[in-house]
Amino acid sequence: MASFNCTTSSSLSTLRKQPLHSDPFKTPPHLHHLSPPISHFSTPPLTLKTLKPITSQTPLRSSSIPITSDLSTTSAPQSLKSRLKNGETLYGLFLLSFSPTLAEISGLAGYDFVVVDMEHGHGGISDALPCLHALAATRTPAILRLPESSPMWAKKALDLGPQGIMFPMIDNPKLARKAVSYCRFPPNGVRGSAHTVVRASSYGIDEGYLSNYEEELMIMCQVESEEGVEKIQEIAAVDGVDCIQMGPLDLSASMGFLWDPGNKKVRAMMRTAEKAVKGGGGAYLAGFAMPHDGPQDLRQRGYHMVSGAVDVGMFRSAAVEDVNKFKMSLMKGSDDDDDDETAEGGGKHGDADDNSLFSSFGDVMVKWAGRQAIQGMLRLLALVCTLLLASNLSFGFRYGEILFPTIARDLKYFYEVR
Image 1 (cartoon, rainbow, N blue to C red):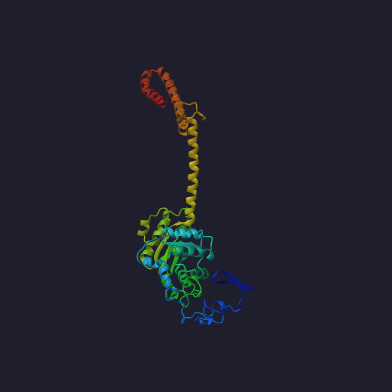
Image 2: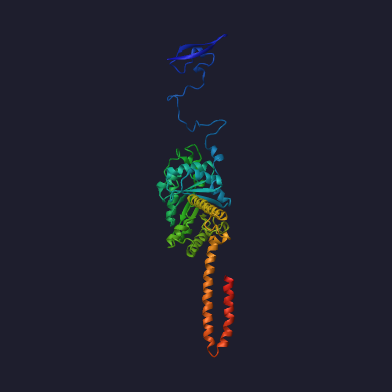
């Protein structure tokens, strides 16, 4: 093989062939004036023999650009727990579609948090990860709701690095204590340790992860049964439980009101649970905004976190409204076209003098007036017959004097109808 080198003379440039050098680190003779020999570099070439692992004695840092957990303070959103401690009331959304685009839109729209729902949504851990990426890009805290309360699901979810984790169907304090243990490393829990390589610790770059994860992670226990409400104060008092999430739909189903979540008995049960959590003071209260709930009302009842919508439900409502609006516009446009044709004399009733008489409302009124006229005539006939019969009796004249005013009223009514 050969390489081409361009040399410059005072009159022209010429090409000459030179053999390729087999040693890539040796400077070709004709380039000595452009580059120093490789031995002049302070750092030897990077090979498998010279590659050294990063240790705590040789941290991978730059004097100008830090690449460790120092970045987290500027890129991570303020934690949910710190905002709640400041007395804020947070408003969020449930994400069932597992769409990173909708997750990103939700964050950009200004929701304080988004719950990626693996209980009722179709996705799992691998589907949730892109949603967490999208939410992180908008600095929006993510909460992962598990499909069940188990150490396996908790371990996988926590390794993704959400700010909160929600355990469904916590009916007693024993289940609550188990849920907390799934979130703690030994000896305080049973969570598997892979903190050096998972997303939760920035893949090991966040050196302070083990020191801060308990303080930053929000553990939420969902109470959604009669049994859970009866023991809700004990559940809220479990060490490590940060928030009680109320589940009004499952609660109404457990009470026998599947089709009536707004039933008075369900609402009374909800008030009992809310007062118990609010009075206990050990955990925050979170819940869904039902159609009969107002924001100020929820706040007065003690809610610190409120979820007002589901992404799938919002898209459904918007889609149905859009379709109906379009079709109604088409129908209105068709009616307007018919009216135009009628005005020009080309419609079905083009020979009529008053076109409005043949509108749908006019047709109804004509039929109604006709029925009233027939009824009035029948009443008039009946009264006349009665009058004639009465005139043959001894008190006929007196009876006639009583009936004539009635006949007059009916006649007046009849002509008014006409």
